[in-house]
Length: 461
Image 1 (tube, rainbow, N blue to C red):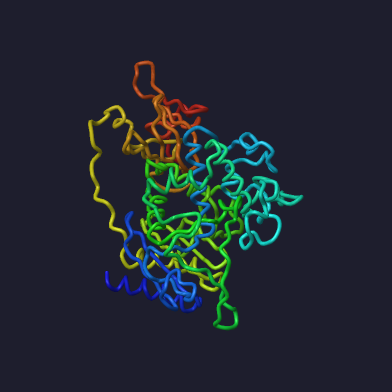
Image 2: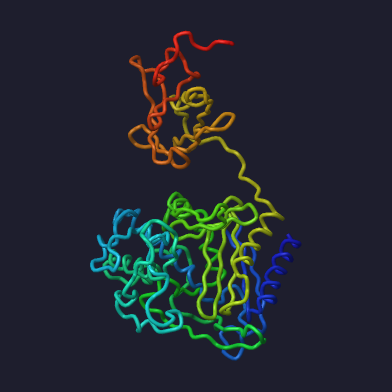
């Protein structure tokens, strides 16, 4: 709507002006498509080294820094889904001679490996990758900073190791080529590249106390490229946001992306507002949970935040080293749309196909002791168990398995098995959920309740 578009442009303009960015580009993705783009610049002329501005349209490339890590994580999860690795595998199982052979793939993805935050030597983001030609050159004498698996500790070299892992399991093919073939081409992201391709913005540093500029170098970081090398556009990142929200079976399914969005390391602080999944950052802002990533490289800032519940994403890119609150701009772009134009839910539709009457007969009230629950049937034979009233219960969703059981997807029963137990005559006796017994009535005297039920049954005072 016009008022929403004006509010979006104003937020981008405030971000560019107050942050003193030579240029800033923004976008909003709604319902899986690019719904709005905007740009503000000090001067026009994308790719023109005499002009700091680069706001010539949504196809202008900016360096996206650590948003690159989300692409690397998707490649690793593809390897997992293909059965070439498990997330619990130690790195040394696949990369011989690693400085940290015992850290797991999951710990590297979630920045809980305890490895050093930065690469050895001079500031790796501003110096050529040739200074670190071998994997051993990425770490100093003490690559470990914390015990593995205990705490979140951001590690750029950790993602360099994941890039090497991808190359090892893809028969030596450079990770960037794997990315292009397996991810970028299927998603139509032709303007996302390892090196800049015109039209692109130039990177600048803005003096903290004067309105003057200094050009920043755009180095090829070599082995560190999986940590932050990519260049992209708001158009391409719009496609990426849609993919991270909905999935694409040509690249990665929706269930795996939901796994990536799940917190993987313990939050720190009594009331956490930031966390990390598998390659994706998590942020609580104004009572909304956002997933995505931020990025920075010399001369560039980037941010992509997705409100999955509202199916809206905000993207912001700037060509300066510091100044703009780029994360807040991207989050606010998503929030403006979510608040002014709340998502209209899809219409309810009955499930397609014939009804499995045995499954239908399982639905309705069940009782764990005196706790009343309700079991609902969902699409693809999935089940959902929720507390009917009160508190103190444990709800979960369940995926149907080929052997006639169900596996918990979330909550207390995540990973636990739900099975239907039948009596000798074939009728349903009860549900067994990880040894929890659910019966059709609360503490039925004849029911299979562990420990038995008092013979006199329920009574008054």
